[in-house]
Length: 91
Image (cartoon, rainbow, N blue to C red; front, side, top):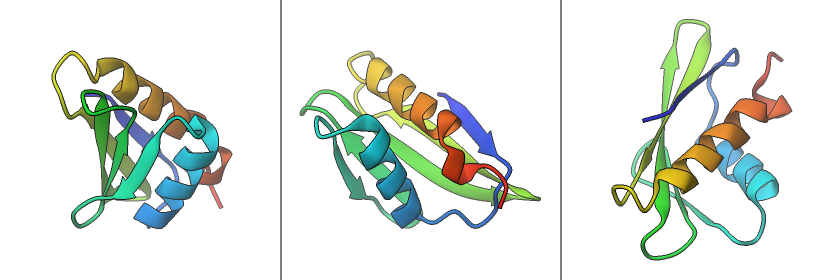
């Protein structure tokens, strides 16, 4: 399960949806999940879920595939998009 830690606090699910939508493109469906999570899917078998957690001075995104093995590539692309996003660097 990829974990991405960014040096910005209080990142909202709406911000994650906006960033992933722009970085991943139209081939992905991005929706709000339960609580502080976001769901990303490419097909019925390929999807990922991003849990958003605040820790001291940072935000941690835990990315996991929704279907074992079939979703590994999607989870990896989502984690990479979050890691490379300039919006989640320091304010």
